[in-house]
Amino acid sequence: MNPAKILQDLMLPIAIIAIAWWAVPHVGELPPTLAGIKVYGVYFVIALGALLGIAFRRGRIVFALITLALAYASYGWVARDELTGFRAHTLFAALGVLVPLNLALLCVMPERGIFNMHGLQRSGVIAVEALLTLWVIKAPLTWVTAWAISPFFDSTLFAASPVRQLGWIFIALGIGASLAVWMIRRIAIDIAFAGALCAFALAMHHVGVADAFAVYIAAAALVFTIALLQDTFRMAFRDELTGLPSRRSLNERMMGLGRQYAIAMCDVDHFKNFNDTHGHDLGDQVLKMVAAKLDAVGGGTAFRYGGEEFTILFPGKDIAHALPHLEALRSAIAEYKIAVRAPDRPAKPAPATRKQGAFRETTSVAVTISIGVVDSSAQLATTAGVIKAADAALYRAKNKGRNLVSR
Image 1 (tube, rainbow, N blue to C red):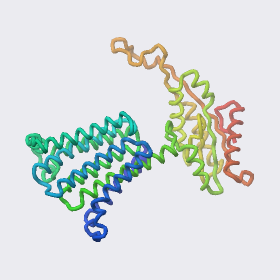
Image 2 (image 1 turned 180 degrees about the vertical axis):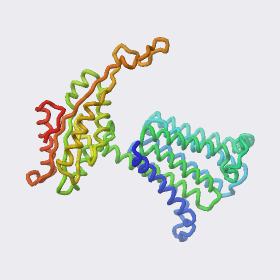
Image 3 (image 1 turned 180 degrees about the horizontal axis):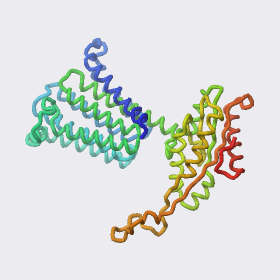
Image 4 (image 1 turned 120 degrees about the horizontal axis):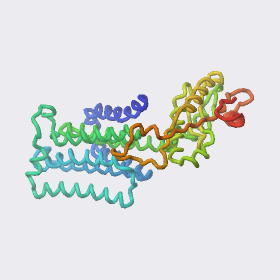
C-alpha cells in the first residue's frame, strides 16, 4: 500500500479522536442553555450517521452505530445511580467484550444491506446480547460478573484502569482484526472500525471522568459517519476494479486545468480477443496490472476512461515532458509476463503428485498498449478538443501497428 494513502486513511480517525480528547475538559464549560447537547448530542450524531447509512444501504455502519447507541444508553442507565456495584460492573464488563466483538465482526463481514434476512440476523444477535446481559443482572448471576472482571494474569499494565483484562483483550483483538481487514481491502470504512474501537477504548478507560464517555462515543460515531461519506465519494469517483479515479473524476479535474497540460489516451491492444481466449478473470488481472503501471507514471495522474481505455493527465506539462514517461510505460507493460494456468492442471496439486519445477509448466502471456498524446495549444483551446485529438492520436498508433506512442 502507498505510504501516502496509509497516512491519509489514518489521519481522519486520529484527528477526530484528538479533537475529542481536547473537548472532554471543555464540555463542562457549556452554558446551561446548551446543557442538552451533553446528553442528546451523542444520539444526534449517531442518528445522523444511521440515516446516512440507511440512505446509502450500508448495513455494517448502521449496526455499528446501533451498537454504540446501546453502549451509551447502558452508560446512562448506570450513571444515574453510580459507576460501581454489581449492575455497573456487569454492564461495563459486557460492553468491554460485546462492543469490540460486534464491531470486529461487522468489519470482517461483507456488506449485506439492512432490511433483509441478513439485517434481521444481525439485529437478532444484538438483541440476544442485550437480553443475556439483562438476565445476568436480574438473575443475578454474580459468578459470571466475578469471572469477567477477575484478572487472568498478574500484570501491572492497566491495573488502575476501570476496564478489566478481558475487556482489553477483546478491544485489542478488535482493533487488530479491523486493521488487518483494512490492510487487505484498503477501504475507509474498515479503518473507521479500528478508529471507533480506539475511541471506545478511551471512553471506557475514562468512564469516571465527567462527559468523557459521551464525547468519545460521539467521536466514534463521527468516525463512522465521515468514513461513510468518504467511501460513497470513492464509489462515485473511483473505478472499483482498478482503483484508479473514474471518468467522472477526470471530467471534474479537467474543469480546473490551466492553459498548459498534456493528455494521453491509452488502450489495451486486442483486449476483446484476449478476453475471449483467456477469460474475463484473466482480463480483469490485465486491467489491474495496466492500471498499476499507469498509476506509477511520473508527473501524471491516471484515470480509467472506460472498458480497456485509460487516460493520463499531465497538468502544467507538454508533450516533450510526457513522451519519455509514456515510452517507459509502454515498454514496462509489453515486458510484463502474466502467468496462465494450463487448462488440465489442478488448482492445488496433491503433494504426492506435485512435480519439481511444476511452476515452469505454467505458460505466460503478455499484452501491449497503444498510446496517443497531445497537449493544449491555440488550435486545441478546449479540454474536449484536446481529448478528441488525443483519441485521434491513439487510433493513429493502432493503425501503425499498435504497441506505439503516437502524437
